[in-house]
Image (cartoon, rainbow, N blue to C red; front, top):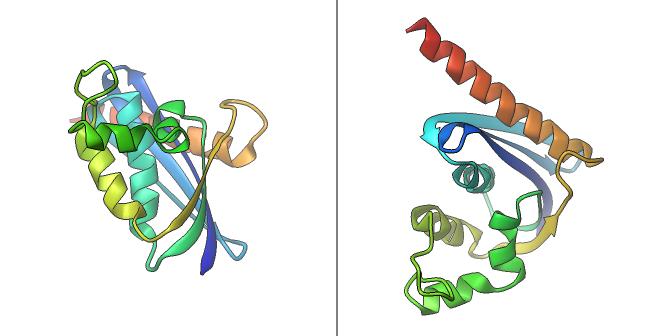
Length: 151
């Protein structure tokens, strides 16, 4: 099984507002860098979109290490909350609806068959690839903002 490292980050200018995401996939010393932006979104949607977008690139089932500074994205897997959400028909412990269900469901579909280690990193700290993803996310926000100013 191929071993792939995935680094992701999402950002938002205003929340909600213009959002961006970045991801870096590393396999056998080769990097693939991807990013994107949306006009009206939230930081949590961008965090999830970064992971989803990276997973969509994979052509086969892999052994993955997914690095993120987003507790929102990782804790449901690290702490097995997602299983409880599914069992409770996408409700949280306090019976409120889980936010971003569409993205959680897409993410669940995409992780099927992969071996995944979810790794929380400290944001805006010493993780070079997380910082690169943050810069990618912020750059896509600026690019989208500039494009819309020209219209």
